[in-house]
Amino acid sequence: MIRRRAHFVGTYGLLTLTVLLFLVFSLVLPDTFPTMDNISSILSNQSIPAILALGVTVPIAAGRFDLSIGYGLGLAHVMVLHLIVDEHWPWQLACLTVVVGGGLAGIANGIIVEFARIDSLIATLGTGSMMYAATGWITDGGRIVPGPEGLPPAFTALYDSTFLGLPLPAFYVLALGAALWVLLERLPLGRYLYVIGSNPRAASVLGIPTHRISVVAFAASGLIVGCAGVLLAAQQQIGNPSVGLEYLLPAFVGALLGSTAIKPGRANALGTLVAVAVLAVGLAGIGQLGAQFWATPLFNGATLLIAVGLAGYSARRRLRTGALTAPGAERARHGRQDAP
Image (cartoon, rainbow, N blue to C red; front, side, top):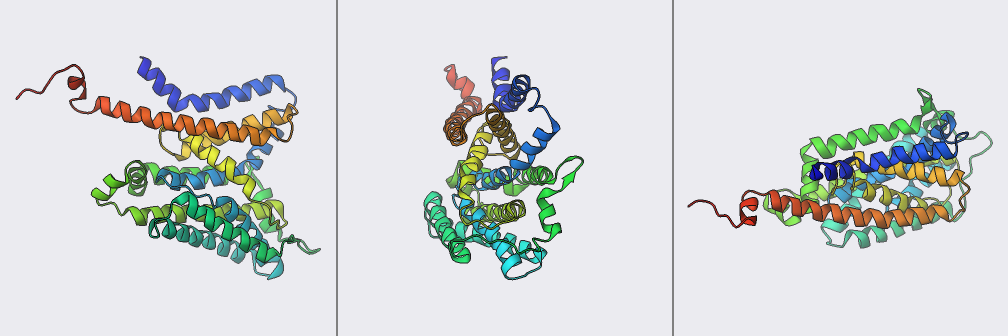
């Protein structure tokens, strides 16, 4: 009974917390919080952090970290506007080019990490710095501002449109979350990623191409960052070279906190979505209560520490549980031996 309760708390505790937070803020702020306008605002404002959190979930599943996502996001959104505004490219071609470029950047990250054997934190921090330099070179330190004719309406509609009464970006998040759930939970590639993340040596012994699979994980992260950059450009409608880094911490908070839910002890898409929902509801609530500007980074930083601690605890608990439930473990614990 106790084990079942612990399993329920570990699996659905974060989702329950989301519901409780929403109810509490609805009672405290009945006129502003439980409204369709507020829900739409939360869904719209948190769409890009949610997409990035899902993006970093893939390499985290393989035990890698991609710190270049913030820099990559800034470069992607600037590049989209540069191609549309300065180079007069069709917006569809500009978006496709940036998304493909994000995938290529992810492949470069994977090759550096896997074949140059540089730690993923250091490697992606270095490539991210280079992306930031490219952003400054493209913009010359200034902003990219569209002319009087503005941006193509079909391009800005990528972010501004609604579907079934809800912001369209929310459906991008749901679609991406569903795709990654299938990838990680139902396809062999996902199982390979989890094996690599939990025990790289065992993965090699099993014949899993660890280096190639890890490069694929970084490539997926880069593609998702490219898509997020397109969406950010449609939202901002101005190319700002300083935008991007503020999305890094929320993305990792969502991915790491998500590894403590639904599938505790491992990064998973559904858990990431639940974690993003908790962060979104919490930030919206404290914002409407009149919190100061520094409350957001304080909230994100504290949540990151809690997420890392809980993720480590869940992983250790899974190892202990696996050891105790292994064949013969129960008999060994009671001093018994198999019959000869």
